[in-house]
Image 1 (cartoon, helix red, strand yellow):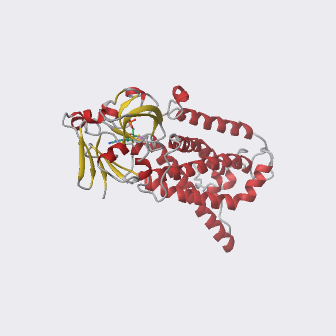
Image 2 (cartoon, protein in one colour; image 1 turned 45 degrees about the vertical axis):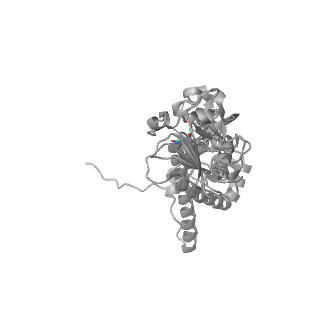
Image 3 (cartoon, rainbow, N blue to C red; image 1 turned 120 degrees about the horizontal axis):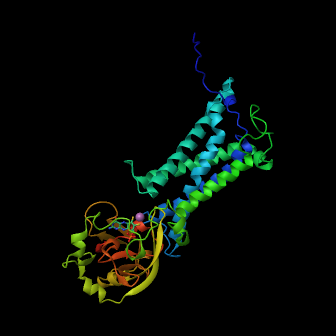
Length: 390
Ligand SMILES: Nc1nc2c(c(=O)[nH]1)N[C@H]1C(S)=C(S)[C@@H](COP(=O)(O)O)O[C@H]1N2
Ligand SMILES: [Mo]
């Protein structure tokens, strides 16, 4: 005869692995904290860089600044994935810990649980949406940038609270040997089973290193070959990747039309220039990277007309903010704003050539914006109009 066993809710004491010790959690936590800190700071930089008309102008130098900060942002986020998984695994038993009986303890316990739930949810949300974005996969309806930004504050706030609450335990754990059992739950096995704590930590560092190497080649040229997971690490026409092609953005006809004119407008003053007019102007050559918010970047040499020279044709005052409009009629990235300090920079160009050859259609023919220290998403392609408000 079969006997019925009642299913039992698992309990903290059921998790006995020798590896789930605060000495391990704290060591992984340090690096996780470093990654989240780096991602937060570089994320603030990226948010600032993408804010139209910020009260504090985003700098134009060094020209590779955004390339570095956004590369660090995506690499730190990628490195955080294996670290977070290992850390959550080591503390998982806490999830099923029995709440204390005393009312006062229960309240404290509840508050701690809620703060950790917020932290874990925000951290997972940030890493999942960030990675999906870097892979150009948008399986959601919300606007990525404001959502990722808002959640970043929640994640970092919850992280600071978490570190403050756990500080005594963290410092005790870091101060003791990895194999020390002094801080362990009493039900943990004594001594390693399949893998030692040091072995687990080493495996974690290696997994993190592999995750970094597999993506960093999108930004670091000499890592390109090993970055099997890097998006856009291959080359596009003229050695520079393409994010959105002319066909995808529906601009082929307008961009290749002989009737193309660039309009520069300042109030009722207007200049209209053909491609030949642009080519006949005094041209500047500058080495500037395309640095996509998704983490890939590529350096290139651009030749074109300084935006300031075009603004001078219609007499706009120095420091004017410029609206850059693409020939593209629908979809994202058709507009961008140049703050006054950017518009007046001598290397802010309407580029006509890339690495000495005429711009290819996918890189923004007949002309595209390229400016120093600027997110790729704002380097408008297929420019049709520059406008300064009066
Ligand atoms: N008009 C227009 N400009 C655009 C885009 C676009 O979709 N439409 N994509 C932007 C993005 S997200 C990036 S990263 C750069 C990439 O430039 P590239 O394709 O020449 O490498 O172009 C930017 N300029
Ligand atoms: Mo981009």
